[in-house]
Amino acid sequence: MHTTFRRRTLALATLAAALFAGNTAFAQDKNTLKVGVSVGNGEQIFEVVKKVAAKDGLNIQVVVFNDYQLPNAALASGDLDANAFQHQPFLDNQNKARGFDIVPVGLTITAPLGFYSRKIKSIDQLPEGASVGIQNDPSNGNRALLLLQQAGLITLKPEAVKNNNATPLDVVTNPKKLKLIALDAAQLPRSLDDLTIASINNDYAEKAGLSLNKDAVIKEAPVSPYANLIAVRRLDKDKPWAKRLVAAYQSPEVKSFIETQFKGSLVPAF
Figure 1: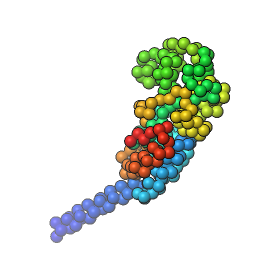
Figure 2 (figure 1 turned 45 degrees about the horizontal axis):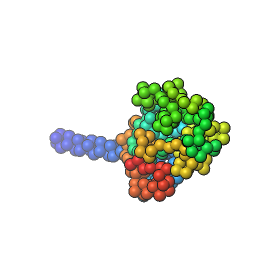
Figure 3 (figure 1 turned 120 degrees about the horizontal axis):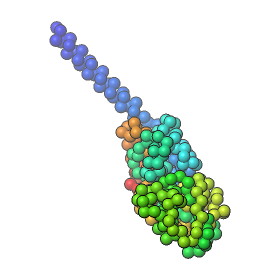
Figure 4 (figure 1 turned 180 degrees about the vertical axis):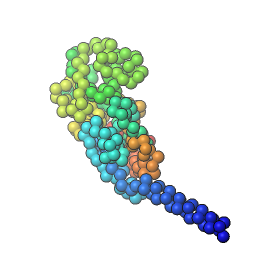
C-alpha cells in the first residue's frame, strides 16, 4: 500500500516538474520582440526580417534610433530584447566604458565605411590643411583613422593600429597637415559643407543621399573585421527566441534583399 502510494506520488511529482519545465521554456520563448535598429538601411532590412519571422510566429517590433549611443543603453535596461546596429569593436568598447553585459548572437551585414566630400571628386584633389571629419566614438574613430592611413594620408603608431584604439593623438606623420575634427557620427553628414572630407557611416550616408559606390572618395574593402551583429543581454543569449531572430535575419530572403537592394554598399556577413 505504502509502496503504491510512493510510486503515485513520485509519478505526480515527475509530471509536475515536466510541466513546470515546459511552461518555463514556453515563457522564455516569447513570440513578440522589440529590436533596436539604426535609421536608414537597418529599417529597410528589418521590414524583410519581420515578414520572414512572422512565418515562424515571431512578431518583431522595430524601434529606430538615430544615435549610436542609445540602443545598447535601451537593451541593457530591458526596453529592448535585442538590437542590430553595431560591429564587435563598438560593442566591446561600450561594454567596457558603460558596464553593459551585452553579447553577440549572430552576424548581419558588413557596411564598408567611406569618406565623402562636397568639395572634391577624388582623394587626389585633397588640399594641404584640409579639414577632415571623423567619428568621436573610439571604435569608429579608430576605423576612420585606419582608412586614412590605408590611403597614405597619415601614419599611426603601430601599437595603436595593433590594439585597434587609434586616436588623433596617435598620428605620427601627417604630410598634408590635415586638420582632424572629431564629431558625433550623426553630425558628420550635416557638417559636410564645412569639412573638406568626412568619414560617414553607411546608414547616415544613405539618409543624407550619399552612395558609397558613387560618392565616396575613400572606402573600405567589402570584407573587414567590422561585420555588424545582432546583440542581446548575456542572460538571453541561449533563449529560443534569440535563435529564431537570428534565423529570420540569416534567411535566404533577407540575403537576397541585401544583395539586390544595396548592390555592394552593404554585404551579407552570414
